Length: 152
Image 1: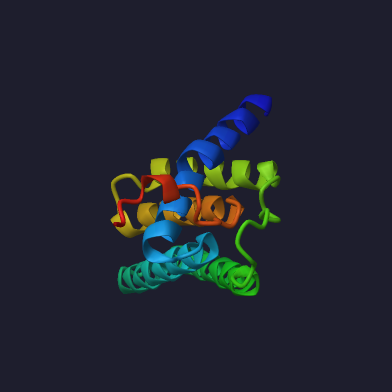
Image 2: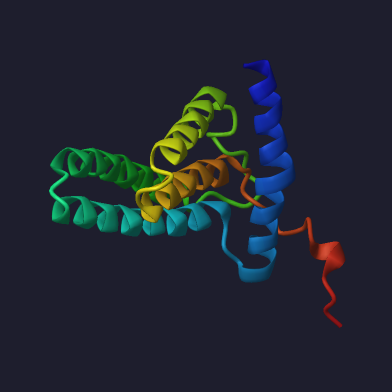
């Protein structure tokens, strides 16, 4: 588990935090707002999955997707509460290594099981992982890329 914590810190510090800073510096979208947009996109994919599984008479898989939809709606509620945090605030989800490990493992399992069936299930799983990582980033201040701006 210690190696996953190092890998998790690498992803947060070197991948998702710079992306969050870049999006905030160029578009003015904070990490929680970006997580909200990704969550809405995952909900859209989930509705497509439910429609697909009901039309192919796979009702048990549609029920599982309804359960995932309730999880996504809860995540969306949490994001709405955290969206007004001031810039530079440390995320309350930063040190939840075990939940990110479970989400990461869930992503790998879903990707392996549904590799040949439907694209939207794999995309929804990847979006769920990205939502959780963007929620775990610190709220950007917007000054990280100020040295690279070319405004005259």
